[in-house]
Length: 279
Image (cartoon, rainbow, N blue to C red; front, side, top):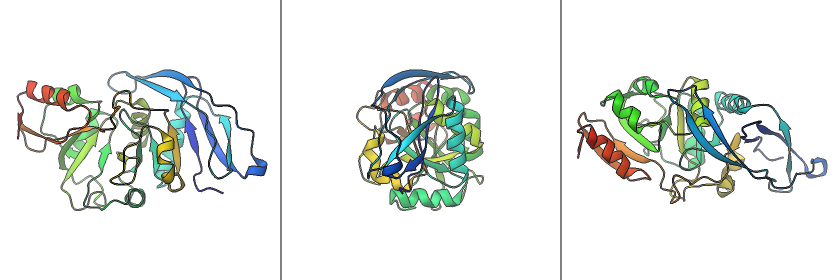
Protein backbone atom coordinates (compact mmCIF):
# COMPACT_ATOMS: atom_id res chain seq x y z
CA UNK A 1 0.00 0.00 0.00
CA UNK A 2 1.09 3.53 -0.67
CA UNK A 3 1.39 5.88 2.30
CA UNK A 4 -0.22 8.60 0.21
CA UNK A 5 -3.70 8.02 1.58
CA UNK A 6 -6.09 10.56 0.19
CA UNK A 7 -6.66 12.63 -2.91
CA UNK A 8 -9.26 15.36 -3.06
CA UNK A 9 -10.67 17.18 -6.06
CA UNK A 10 -12.68 20.39 -5.88
CA UNK A 11 -15.85 21.00 -7.88
CA UNK A 12 -18.57 23.62 -7.75
CA UNK A 13 -21.38 21.04 -7.43
CA UNK A 14 -19.58 18.31 -5.57
CA UNK A 15 -16.28 17.36 -4.03
CA UNK A 16 -14.80 14.10 -5.23
CA UNK A 17 -12.96 12.62 -2.28
CA UNK A 18 -10.65 9.84 -3.34
CA UNK A 19 -10.84 8.11 -0.02
CA UNK A 20 -8.79 4.95 -0.23
CA UNK A 21 -6.01 3.30 -2.19
CA UNK A 22 -6.64 -0.30 -3.16
CA UNK A 23 -4.26 -3.03 -4.26
CA UNK A 24 -4.39 -3.47 -8.02
CA UNK A 25 -6.42 -6.70 -8.06
CA UNK A 26 -9.21 -5.09 -5.99
CA UNK A 27 -9.15 -1.70 -7.66
CA UNK A 28 -12.22 0.01 -8.98
CA UNK A 29 -12.11 0.77 -12.65
CA UNK A 30 -10.80 4.29 -13.11
CA UNK A 31 -13.00 6.51 -15.23
CA UNK A 32 -11.59 8.27 -18.26
CA UNK A 33 -9.88 11.62 -17.80
CA UNK A 34 -12.44 14.32 -17.19
CA UNK A 35 -11.80 18.03 -17.37
CA UNK A 36 -14.16 20.61 -15.94
CA UNK A 37 -13.88 24.29 -15.15
CA UNK A 38 -15.73 26.06 -12.42
CA UNK A 39 -15.86 29.27 -10.48
CA UNK A 40 -16.30 29.18 -6.74
CA UNK A 41 -17.26 32.33 -4.85
CA UNK A 42 -16.93 32.46 -1.08
CA UNK A 43 -18.38 35.24 1.03
CA UNK A 44 -17.10 34.02 4.40
CA UNK A 45 -14.23 36.49 4.26
CA UNK A 46 -14.28 40.25 3.93
CA UNK A 47 -14.87 40.18 0.19
CA UNK A 48 -15.85 37.58 -2.41
CA UNK A 49 -13.09 35.52 -3.99
CA UNK A 50 -13.39 34.12 -7.51
CA UNK A 51 -11.23 31.11 -8.24
CA UNK A 52 -11.03 29.21 -11.49
CA UNK A 53 -10.07 25.58 -11.00
CA UNK A 54 -9.53 22.72 -13.44
CA UNK A 55 -10.76 19.35 -12.22
CA UNK A 56 -9.24 16.06 -13.42
CA UNK A 57 -9.48 12.43 -12.49
CA UNK A 58 -6.12 10.73 -12.16
CA UNK A 59 -4.82 7.21 -11.78
CA UNK A 60 -2.10 6.56 -9.22
CA UNK A 61 1.41 5.23 -9.48
CA UNK A 62 2.83 1.77 -8.78
CA UNK A 63 -0.13 -0.20 -10.15
CA UNK A 64 -2.54 1.26 -7.62
CA UNK A 65 -5.88 2.89 -8.26
CA UNK A 66 -8.34 4.92 -6.25
CA UNK A 67 -12.11 4.85 -5.91
CA UNK A 68 -13.94 8.18 -6.28
CA UNK A 69 -16.71 8.85 -3.80
CA UNK A 70 -19.17 11.73 -3.83
CA UNK A 71 -19.11 13.45 -0.43
CA UNK A 72 -21.06 16.60 -1.15
CA UNK A 73 -20.05 20.22 -1.47
CA UNK A 74 -16.72 21.98 -1.09
CA UNK A 75 -17.22 22.19 2.66
CA UNK A 76 -16.45 18.48 2.81
CA UNK A 77 -13.05 19.04 1.21
CA UNK A 78 -12.32 21.79 3.72
CA UNK A 79 -13.39 19.48 6.55
CA UNK A 80 -11.08 16.74 5.30
CA UNK A 81 -8.15 19.15 5.00
CA UNK A 82 -8.72 20.46 8.52
CA UNK A 83 -8.85 16.91 9.87
CA UNK A 84 -5.51 16.02 8.31
CA UNK A 85 -3.88 19.21 9.54
CA UNK A 86 -5.15 18.76 13.09
CA UNK A 87 -3.65 15.26 13.12
CA UNK A 88 -0.23 16.75 12.38
CA UNK A 89 -0.11 15.85 8.69
CA UNK A 90 1.30 17.89 5.84
CA UNK A 91 -1.03 18.38 2.85
CA UNK A 92 -0.62 19.77 -0.66
CA UNK A 93 -2.88 22.66 -1.69
CA UNK A 94 -3.40 25.00 -4.63
CA UNK A 95 -2.78 28.71 -4.08
CA UNK A 96 -3.18 31.78 -6.27
CA UNK A 97 0.35 31.30 -7.64
CA UNK A 98 1.91 27.84 -7.36
CA UNK A 99 1.20 24.61 -5.45
CA UNK A 100 2.10 24.61 -1.79
CA UNK A 101 2.45 22.18 1.06
CA UNK A 102 1.06 23.16 4.42
CA UNK A 103 0.72 22.15 8.04
CA UNK A 104 -0.65 23.86 11.11
CA UNK A 105 1.93 26.45 12.15
CA UNK A 106 1.11 25.85 15.82
CA UNK A 107 1.55 22.08 15.54
CA UNK A 108 5.20 21.22 16.17
CA UNK A 109 4.82 17.70 14.77
CA UNK A 110 3.52 19.07 11.48
CA UNK A 111 6.21 21.76 11.38
CA UNK A 112 8.94 19.16 11.85
CA UNK A 113 7.48 17.05 9.02
CA UNK A 114 7.31 20.11 6.77
CA UNK A 115 11.01 20.83 7.23
CA UNK A 116 11.84 17.16 6.61
CA UNK A 117 9.77 16.94 3.43
CA UNK A 118 11.29 20.13 2.05
CA UNK A 119 14.79 19.04 3.12
CA UNK A 120 15.04 22.57 4.39
CA UNK A 121 17.30 24.03 7.05
CA UNK A 122 15.45 25.65 9.93
CA UNK A 123 17.44 28.84 9.37
CA UNK A 124 15.51 29.34 6.12
CA UNK A 125 12.12 30.81 7.12
CA UNK A 126 8.72 29.39 6.18
CA UNK A 127 5.79 31.78 5.76
CA UNK A 128 2.38 31.43 7.34
CA UNK A 129 -1.05 31.72 5.72
CA UNK A 130 -4.05 33.24 7.49
CA UNK A 131 -7.69 33.54 6.51
CA UNK A 132 -8.25 37.26 6.80
CA UNK A 133 -6.60 40.61 7.44
CA UNK A 134 -7.88 40.75 11.01
CA UNK A 135 -5.76 37.66 11.79
CA UNK A 136 -2.44 39.29 10.88
CA UNK A 137 -1.82 41.22 14.14
CA UNK A 138 -2.07 37.98 16.12
CA UNK A 139 1.13 36.73 14.51
CA UNK A 140 3.01 39.82 13.30
CA UNK A 141 3.57 43.35 14.60
CA UNK A 142 1.84 45.32 11.84
CA UNK A 143 3.50 48.60 10.79
CA UNK A 144 1.10 49.70 8.05
CA UNK A 145 -2.52 50.81 7.95
CA UNK A 146 -5.47 48.52 7.36
CA UNK A 147 -5.97 50.32 4.03
CA UNK A 148 -2.54 49.14 2.84
CA UNK A 149 -3.30 45.59 3.87
CA UNK A 150 -6.68 45.68 2.14
CA UNK A 151 -5.12 46.80 -1.15
CA UNK A 152 -2.40 44.14 -1.04
CA UNK A 153 -4.42 41.22 0.28
CA UNK A 154 -5.72 38.75 -0.56
CA UNK A 155 -3.19 38.36 -3.33
CA UNK A 156 0.22 37.01 -4.40
CA UNK A 157 2.17 38.94 -1.76
CA UNK A 158 3.99 37.82 1.40
CA UNK A 159 4.36 40.55 4.04
CA UNK A 160 7.21 40.32 6.54
CA UNK A 161 6.67 41.68 10.05
CA UNK A 162 8.34 41.10 13.38
CA UNK A 163 6.74 37.98 14.81
CA UNK A 164 4.63 38.07 17.97
CA UNK A 165 5.10 35.71 20.94
CA UNK A 166 1.91 33.91 19.87
CA UNK A 167 3.67 32.09 17.04
CA UNK A 168 5.03 28.59 17.59
CA UNK A 169 8.69 28.89 18.63
CA UNK A 170 9.45 25.72 16.62
CA UNK A 171 8.58 27.53 13.40
CA UNK A 172 11.58 29.50 12.13
CA UNK A 173 13.22 29.26 15.58
CA UNK A 174 16.25 31.35 14.68
CA UNK A 175 14.33 34.19 12.98
CA UNK A 176 12.53 37.06 14.72
CA UNK A 177 10.42 37.88 11.67
CA UNK A 178 7.59 36.07 9.91
CA UNK A 179 6.20 36.22 6.39
CA UNK A 180 2.39 36.32 6.28
CA UNK A 181 0.24 35.35 3.27
CA UNK A 182 -3.45 35.60 2.44
CA UNK A 183 -3.68 33.90 -0.98
CA UNK A 184 -6.48 34.88 -3.33
CA UNK A 185 -7.72 31.29 -3.12
CA UNK A 186 -11.02 30.51 -1.42
CA UNK A 187 -10.18 26.92 -0.55
CA UNK A 188 -7.01 27.54 1.42
CA UNK A 189 -8.52 30.56 3.16
CA UNK A 190 -11.54 28.50 4.22
CA UNK A 191 -9.18 25.85 5.58
CA UNK A 192 -7.27 28.43 7.63
CA UNK A 193 -10.56 29.95 8.82
CA UNK A 194 -11.90 26.55 9.90
CA UNK A 195 -8.66 25.68 11.69
CA UNK A 196 -8.76 28.97 13.60
CA UNK A 197 -4.98 29.09 13.33
CA UNK A 198 -2.35 29.92 10.71
CA UNK A 199 -0.98 27.40 8.25
CA UNK A 200 2.75 27.09 7.69
CA UNK A 201 2.87 27.28 3.89
CA UNK A 202 5.74 26.73 1.48
CA UNK A 203 6.11 25.69 -2.14
CA UNK A 204 5.38 22.07 -3.08
CA UNK A 205 8.91 21.10 -4.04
CA UNK A 206 12.18 20.27 -2.36
CA UNK A 207 14.34 23.26 -1.50
CA UNK A 208 16.20 24.67 -4.54
CA UNK A 209 13.95 22.74 -6.98
CA UNK A 210 11.52 24.38 -9.41
CA UNK A 211 8.11 25.53 -8.23
CA UNK A 212 5.13 23.45 -9.37
CA UNK A 213 1.93 24.31 -11.25
CA UNK A 214 0.39 20.81 -11.35
CA UNK A 215 0.20 18.01 -8.80
CA UNK A 216 2.01 15.61 -11.13
CA UNK A 217 5.10 17.80 -10.90
CA UNK A 218 5.71 16.92 -7.25
CA UNK A 219 4.92 13.20 -7.31
CA UNK A 220 8.14 12.53 -5.43
CA UNK A 221 6.58 14.19 -2.38
CA UNK A 222 3.29 12.24 -2.40
CA UNK A 223 4.42 9.37 -0.15
CA UNK A 224 5.20 11.88 2.61
CA UNK A 225 1.91 13.78 2.40
CA UNK A 226 -1.36 13.10 4.18
CA UNK A 227 -3.41 14.37 1.23
CA UNK A 228 -3.16 16.19 -2.09
CA UNK A 229 -5.86 18.69 -3.01
CA UNK A 230 -5.81 19.06 -6.77
CA UNK A 231 -6.85 22.42 -8.19
CA UNK A 232 -5.81 21.50 -11.71
CA UNK A 233 -3.10 23.30 -13.64
CA UNK A 234 -2.29 26.65 -12.05
CA UNK A 235 -0.24 29.49 -13.49
CA UNK A 236 -2.89 31.84 -14.82
CA UNK A 237 -1.58 34.50 -12.42
CA UNK A 238 2.00 33.22 -12.18
CA UNK A 239 2.99 31.46 -15.44
CA UNK A 240 6.73 31.86 -14.77
CA UNK A 241 6.49 30.08 -11.39
CA UNK A 242 7.89 33.08 -9.57
CA UNK A 243 5.74 32.65 -6.49
CA UNK A 244 4.48 35.50 -4.34
CA UNK A 245 6.28 38.81 -4.07
CA UNK A 246 7.96 38.99 -0.65
CA UNK A 247 8.19 42.44 0.92
CA UNK A 248 9.69 43.37 4.28
CA UNK A 249 7.46 45.85 6.15
CA UNK A 250 9.03 45.38 9.56
CA UNK A 251 10.28 48.99 9.72
CA UNK A 252 7.48 51.56 9.88
CA UNK A 253 7.40 53.87 6.86
CA UNK A 254 9.71 51.73 4.72
CA UNK A 255 9.58 48.66 2.52
CA UNK A 256 12.16 46.31 1.06
CA UNK A 257 11.50 43.81 -1.73
CA UNK A 258 13.06 40.54 -0.58
CA UNK A 259 11.85 38.51 -3.58
CA UNK A 260 10.49 40.01 -6.78
CA UNK A 261 7.90 37.27 -7.34
CA UNK A 262 4.99 37.75 -9.71
CA UNK A 263 3.56 41.01 -8.34
CA UNK A 264 6.50 43.31 -7.67
CA UNK A 265 5.41 46.32 -9.70
CA UNK A 266 1.84 46.28 -8.41
CA UNK A 267 3.07 45.89 -4.84
CA UNK A 268 5.49 48.81 -5.11
CA UNK A 269 2.82 51.08 -6.60
CA UNK A 270 0.46 50.37 -3.71
CA UNK A 271 3.12 50.91 -1.06
CA UNK A 272 4.34 54.14 -2.61
CA UNK A 273 0.75 55.35 -2.95
CA UNK A 274 0.71 55.29 0.86
CA UNK A 275 4.08 57.10 1.01
CA UNK A 276 6.22 54.16 2.08
CA UNK A 277 9.85 54.53 1.00
CA UNK A 278 11.97 51.77 -0.49
CA UNK A 279 15.10 50.90 1.42
